[in-house]
Length: 401
Ligand SMILES: Cc1ncc(COP(=O)(O)O)c(C=O)c1O
Image (tube, rainbow, N blue to C red):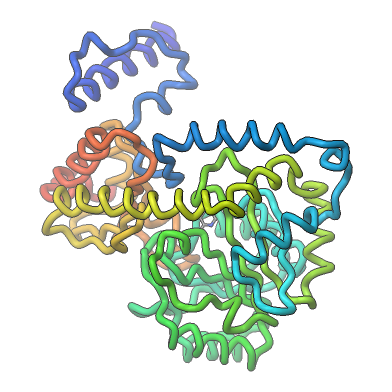
């Protein structure tokens, strides 16, 4: 049998199984797939975290039409590398940039992180991270040759004395933090912890990279590092999750001292963000549409949290009431990589803690579950139930090899 045919048969079995799990007749399941699409179509996606509401296609359609109506010759011309001043002003106002802070446009959160890495010339230098951190930042550091050192954390995030000690022992260029609804742990750093870290960073003159990808989901987040230490912080806010990854627009708030190098990095990596998308984003910010979408996303996250609490009741998870992800600590008999692999074979895609663990930190004790990718709650419930069943009675399948 050819590999392609085998793939299709495996796919068919999985489709039937998921159709049954989702309460459909197995005959409803489509029969033929290209093997490239099999995974996307079949897996219950509890890995990716770009929640999109059903109404958003209509919203985007409306604003694309309004953007089309706004097209004129100047929109086609080259704006400043950091974005047209109208878009920067609208974003600065929306993000409540402090006086003296510059607002620059980038194309996504990841793009902004890359820009910061280049602007601060981080390759070859040392960056302190939390013991668990955003997986793509680990990958970026590996690709660019940035040395990552984990700092011990407690239930409030990075421990200030531990950071001070690392700064004394190493030449640290920057601290990378996600202070609000952290990915993957969901912790939100309280204000006093942020203030203490600002003091340490200030006294050792290190830059603070504040990746606030999930801040929009928090009802009343503490002040940003960008507010507490505007001269040292490079703050990232992206619309990929707040609206959709289809809208490739993100914003960087930086102090005057970083403006030129950040602008050069934007120029070199993208020649500037799309003026068309920036114009569309500005319209949605100006008339309050983005804020309304965000409000609805928080509500939707709360609904999914209720499903999660019901299915994972009694297990050792931590999250935030309006978060689209969950950090599930595993029983000692389980290993996160094995749990991920077994669930993957069963058609449920989750992330192992090892994908987020800093160098030298063991991530086998937890998995990250995303609640935002699946649009149907039945599929979310089926995926969570599969996790629950495996983790509650793990046996040999979920133990490390
Ligand atoms: C902490 C964090 N930063 C950045 C990103 C990437 O954002 P974007 O899709 O805007 O590049 C993600 C996406 O998962 C994230 O979790």
